[in-house]
Image 1 (tube, protein in one colour):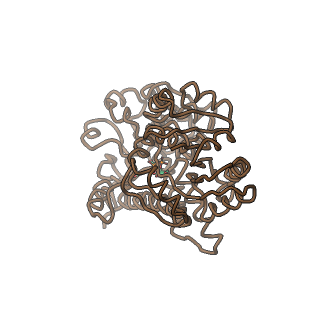
Image 2 (cartoon, rainbow, N blue to C red):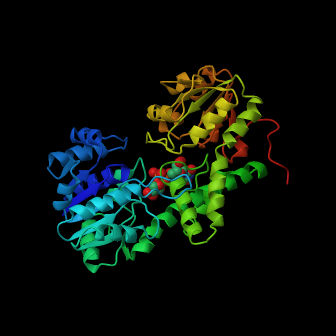
Image 3 (cartoon, protein in one colour):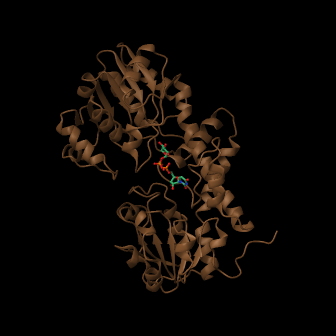
Length: 443
Ligand code: UDX
């Protein structure tokens, strides 16, 4: 099939590359000339394992190209995929201005029947508006479809080539048939539904996953007080098929480009129809506060933070990405600076992006984990990068001024910690906290 993908962000680029990989001719459009030039040279502006290799292979095979010329790309394609960003407005609502602009460009260039497939996450009812924006500018026939994207950063290629399911929301039988054929090589699990339900499936899925995370984080906070181990609790819960084991890792809360934005947007969508989504509001509140447990534990260990050098390992919102959007590390480091601490930060790949969010003469950007830890009065692990799990903890302790370890992601196990001098604080595993006076409450 001939496909145009508009927008070469995470969703657009990965979708474009993967659709070409399964044999389609794909043109990716972006209005940023520098980005198009970079892509044409075979470079990827984001860090995503496997993407660059796959992109170059498909460019070489002649199935994948990049352009700024939206009109020509539309004319040469049967399916147009909208994959532009929908960032949050200050009130939490999704900003649809890029989507509107693209819809109007499609309306003015469309010259024959097309399927317009939306992959951008848009509030319920937006595809109907897109239809109106396009229709207001053309007499040519087209069908709208909402096909939400569920890829995760760091595993985006795998998630796209081997999805759990594909959701196709459209009122057109013709579009259902074509889009089923397009997605058949990826999975047999194809759900067809109406447009509004497809739009809602995306928000409801992300909100549910965010709810699981905030739920287990609250359980971890209680575990710390009653002397239970949250990782064993999550394991025990996860064997129940109705619950499932994924997204039950307690930590410092979720970040990234999707969960914070989509939960806010769904609260807003509900609010617009006079529905108070109380549960999701609490999920967001819990998430906002969970990150500051790191500060509370530091204060418990060090009393005052003023003037103390604190090491931070991990700046990205999760491992295997250089993305720092809504990363909990941003607010944690800001709070450390506010309290007068100096910070020695290290991340394998996200430092450059992070410095655009937070920079200060009080932060030293280390080029290795050990360098960050040297002479620090405490170390906070904020992202579960594999290299942090593999460090020699005895050597690490020797590098530090005080062996205090705040493990925000539970990356170390009891047998790694027990023979080290570390004062170890985990998330919801108080039995591992070898600190006098921090014993669980006696029930
Ligand atoms: C998410 C969704 O998983 C994906 O389907 C959607 O398309 C986009 O949003 P992503 O943001 O890339 O993907 O990352 P994900 O792996 O889902 O993690 C999100 C955040 O939740 C991270 O900050 C991660 O650290 C946190 N998380 C995840 C937990 O704290 N505990 C968990 O058990 C799982």
